[in-house]
Image (tube, rainbow, N blue to C red; front, side, top):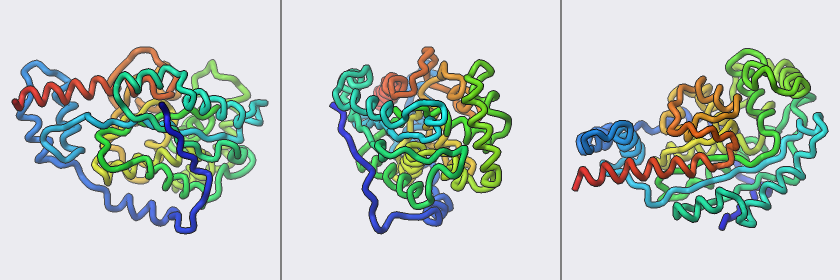
Length: 325
């Protein structure tokens, strides 16, 4: 059964962007000795499973990687820009969260079969962010606070953290961040068949906040959402906890994009679960240089692909363990 964490209540000592920047200046490196040792203990013919075992070993910091405690995390927020398209983002996101809490989604079943934790992190779903085409989506304190709540998802003992989102209309902030930080127009990221009104809204927002291009955290504040900010915080915390990250969908990729724009090495501990059938997620994955673990035509971005990819990571660990013994 999914567990819910509501991140709506603020705390007095939440960090501001200055603390996030300081963290990015001191990122731990991969444990090359652990990766090297793991690389010498592989079964012949293991192919990419051997490379994945080395990756896991290096980032977990142990020569024999393990997958006994993976965690699936879902982040949910409401994007106010959707209201400009006649969509109620609060109602749609709240309904999505409730389905997971009721345990009736495919991911609930997959989590049970994989013996994996499934956590739903609600980020003030009942209160949508501001319309980014009219002004900044978030205040700095709210954005920094959301990043901190994302860090809470990274608890001791987790072997791999899988990130996904169930936020309504999350293509709006994700596409806006891609367009601002990587260039082009919204149609280049969402595909030419996307709704013209949606593309115009994204391009208007990017034009309005063009001055934030040089500061990715400001870009996140103005164009992103609480969910993307929280996922960026989770990815960052995983780096310090030596927890590899498995990304599923455009929201997690947008969070990874912001971190990489801040520090080019910031997402080296991340893997992409699948080559999404969603044009935006597929384009972001290519732009970030990820080699997907799977290509099953999945486009939901709600963790199903990550849950499926966890089985591949388990296989990599099993093959490496068999070679050791």
